[in-house]
Length: 424
Image (cartoon, rainbow, N blue to C red; front, side, top):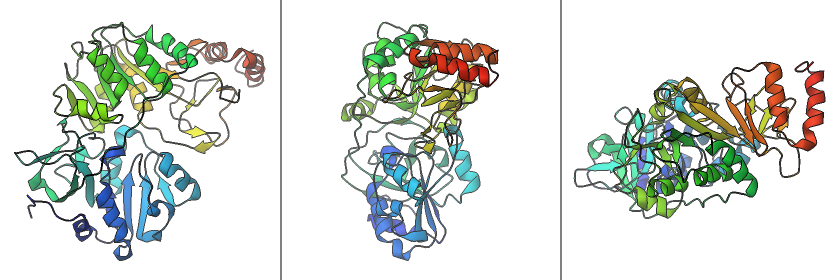
């Protein structure tokens, strides 16, 4: 049945059969009033699971309020879902971001997608706005129930859906969540300088989020002809577009276009995105596919980690041996860059934690998990320099990593490396 006019958010309950799997986009793709309606009707549900990465809004069901009638399955922990996971009231599925659409299609029933969107245009098309992520590939394959808000920018790409393809849609006036810009520290800027000087003019880049990422983008102000192909588009990248640094003219994939799979930042970012023909929101199974990334010459990836051992294994989703986030796209982009002509990948981290512990360690903390394997890691960068790992022996790797560790920890790391047989 077609729904050219909006319906109440509670109409979503008509589509929730027992044991339904409901797919929700990440971050601002979450339809808040629709999920409010689902939770308000939880007493009438049976075995419904909500699948989502990086939720931004806290809800009672995340903390077990409705038992098995309504349960959350996370694919990347956020500040909201982290404590719920630790308490055992939600589930966490390990994944590489590029593979989430395939995981959902093979291991869930994909009963219904519920998503926030822009209001329909005069042709009857909705835009999923800040998101394409893992739901774009489900358009035309899975019923959608949408929540249109005037605060959502209308974006272009593979994230548009015609009203004839939706099971229903409602309206709301809830604003988008804004994320303030990260403020780099002096140490962040030193690390960023090591990376930026190795990024050639004409490169296509993927840069994560956080203080070091913000500093890397700041440090690229004198570059020219850069392209963007990234999972996350945020404010710092827009600055480089406005400055003429990012043009996309040298890209082999989607030339002259900024390619991303989701956007998160300030209201200024969302306004800049609205009807911006230079930006394409494409599904994560395309954007993060290492085979697509590998087609771009001089592709450069920059992502952060929390701990690196002396053979180069990076634990980027756990802190002190406990789950903190998820793999995201770090391994996707590192592998894509590895196969790209003149490609390079940088894993960045301060050499020490705030309390002075070394982030370069003899062995990963018990309970930590490897996000990017030693065979894929290319460069590890701290404020003390760049450890080049690809193609180097175990002993060469250990020496290179010790050389970029904090000087106060280097002797201990040397001794541990000898005890482990990494150095002789």
